[in-house]
Image 1 (cartoon, one colour):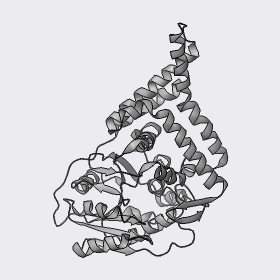
Image 2 (image 1 turned 135 degrees about the horizontal axis):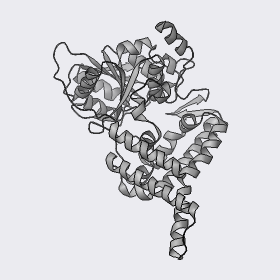
Image 3 (image 1 turned 45 degrees about the vertical axis):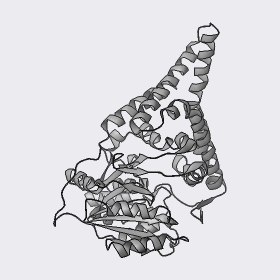
Image 4 (image 1 turned 30 degrees about the vertical axis):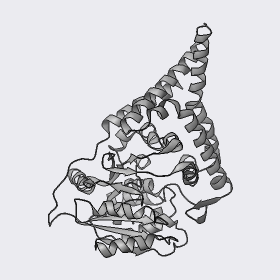
Length: 396
């Protein structure tokens, strides 16, 4: 346990220090690339207007904003039509029903990608806000790294209220603690591919080569899946910290958090019932047991007894856990109070969400999201069948 948190501490520090930051700008001219921004939207009437407005306010004017209305039952399409009348750079694609074997969001992304005309395509969720210089910075980054075929943009997470501040940091914490981004940015290993709804930037040539979103038709986590497919084809992807330019509030309140992550946490962290059981055992040992040992150490000191060696090791693991969270939360602008005191509750609620997801998806075999029910015959990150062979044939 102490070794685990020592490794997590080192990895978090290295990731924070080495993850490149999105900055810099270029001044557009007639020869600069057209940038296509593709936004899938299903029942996003409350958010899509502000997202599109933030794109239209970009200093980079050579862009098109394509919103795919994924059979919304609210006023999403009307909001986008009004914006399109005001600015010809906005286009509404009225999505068709998804074909057999497709999930709704990958199908919406496929339709948006097909409609896009830009040299760079940015896939963005409908509840993200871009600062005015974001697209310029993206173009500069892609120009500075011509070997990069895909760029994943890490945002600033906005959180309000008790439950958001306690639970939502688990997502970015999982990235910085659990994924060696420092290694990911230096390799093409598909397993280390990183992507996200706040912004996946893909070169058109790469996107067409991988077959657009066809290999992600049944992917629950299509954004990470895109990075992995890109890498499986031998292309490079990188992650950059764009928290000074992009912000997102993913979910509002406990109910949305629970429902949102119930749909995918089983597939992300397990994908099978034996793995789900293993996760349910490992997480409490690594994330909750240090608190028990810390309590034992404090009780021994208060009682005037020297703590046992095992308790000291466990208490040291707790110190490393808290120091790591304190440093990470400080850099990312999260609540320091949640960093130091919210972790046990965070872990307990997330274990409950995972158990709920395992029951609904892994046991009952159903996936429900955005008013749709899908059979749980899905993949986490897409279909890689034949990709390695195709890359080998291409290289040969």
